[in-house]
Length: 206
Image (cartoon, rainbow, N blue to C red; front, side, top):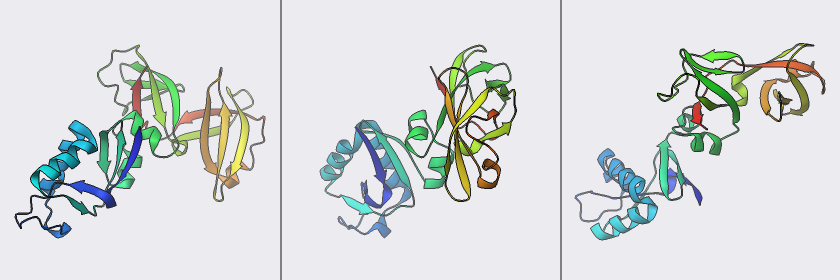
């Protein structure tokens, strides 16, 4: 089961010291950390049970969103950070659109689409280890090239940007976001090169 946890309905153990007050103003950062730890260890059922055991169950509003997977809290941070710096591959693919591209660990980082990403974290894996690199459509670049290795298959106009679907070697396809003015010059069937312009968000082992 996959659950997106909106912080507007976050269940928190309230160690208020005020006889069971349900006011969110009395809930400290320590309470939030304690609740997050309980939920991470045993899921939301464990959090509710612990709160009932202490006789206090609060519903508070926090400026954070969280993602749970099979009852385990994967990450809880502000929405922008959840999108830009997901803690796991699951979170990365759950929030927003994500490309999953084959890569390989090198001595200097991770190689993907003929580019070595020095800031990509291979997680201590040895050079030569195959991995998947997860990158957003806005983190890829697209260049028309009659000898390019990619073929434009679909373009989807989204206003100021156009989402371009590119088929690379084999069965691999990626989504690339370009300004609509730039994308208008790319016809379906055009040959292109795709590269990574931004950071790879997550390196996931195969």
